[in-house]
Length: 313
Image 1 (cartoon, rainbow, N blue to C red):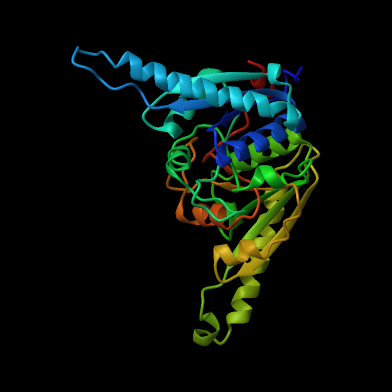
Image 2: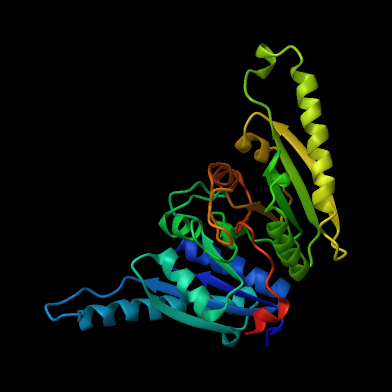
């Protein structure tokens, strides 16, 4: 049986490649952290009929049958992913929006993490944000973990490291401590070392406009290193933490230049303009998600880690 003191992972599953990718990633989290796995399929609500408040019972039964079949398929895959099927709870939920439906299931079950796959149109090995992800990444109260397209086919046997990335000056945000504490809690549960990375962005054409462009960039790198040292000091639980600065002309190219060995998870904070304690994918965070070649963990703004005992509810 799973360790009831570990992490409660909610996987949003559909019977296609993205569902398989999410299931493989969610199973890997549960194997690493222990805890519980809930696999949910969200289907649309029934059509309204003539009677007030009534719906087409035949259509609802059909939708439920499809969801049950999808979850049966998921259960059949779990054994091969190292999770006994009897250790997973299966949930069918009706909602007009699949992402908002998963938020409701997470609240109902006390999940600590929601895992989904990439939208089908994405490049293999990258994450595309579809409607489900868009809803989750603009309102989830718990961290959201996204699997790149094709992850199940090339999933590593274990995670190797959690990298927390943001661009220069955002480590100094007043609400940065909460997401960093949440990242530390997840790294601890997964048994992972942490790398803190600041992306120092140099505007294109800067050298042509400023004679002292190199000196300016050097000052930015020095400030970034000081900010990283302060961020690393927030990890007081013995977690192995290293820091790194990466300079580039844009978020996507700078992220692409990072060393990302197999088993890496890349975490980023929500945009500053979003609601407190909910995920909000700003422009910069969205670029990090789309550029990453590994799973991406998006942390709610102002997030603080749940007590470890909460995962066993």
